[in-house]
Length: 239
Picture 1 (cartoon, rainbow, N blue to C red):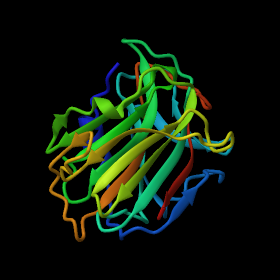
Picture 2: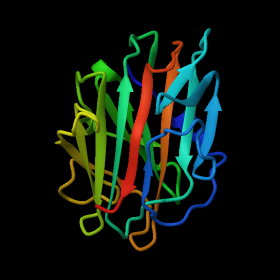
Picture 3: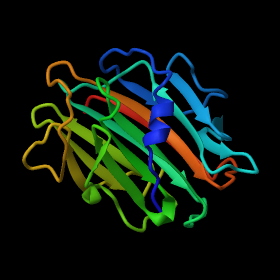
Picture 4: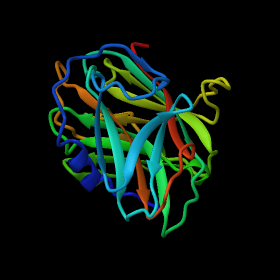
């Protein structure tokens, strides 16, 4: 059950604007519509994001296609290599998964200077969490960042250390409302820190390099009703 995100990423980045360095952001998706001054929207096929029940819902109307996708990119803040930062978001996924039909949600963290350098995390609910890292569009082995069987809802946290140039991944099988119970999943070094579980050689400048943040939902030959796949309680802050 694998998603190749390269074609989706190329589509999703086509409309990207310019952003400044980190501005703290919290987003609970409680408004009736997404704030377009904060988020850049993109979609393809029948995938779309809709805010309802105080969550961001990924929805695919029937009949689905083989490539339904939606993304929102944070326009007002880009965390940098030169600062400590932390990102948290809740996700839920109760959609059924099979080799022929699947759906999920997750996020991209992209080298602002080169969109061929990026990582993604897919939340498949009870089928687990799939992570991937690409360096100049080439896949980097990233098994330590993925998880096996999980639950229909949970949370991901990523903490970045400017001194170590290291992203540390945490997961919780509970969401914010239930109280997070974090456990460490693994570490990723975009510039190849020695002690990282996963390493890449991204061409990102240590002094002024930044990362773009995209949240996404996708479906492969599966209609998705509101409430089945959601994102909530997004936070991007200094730790």
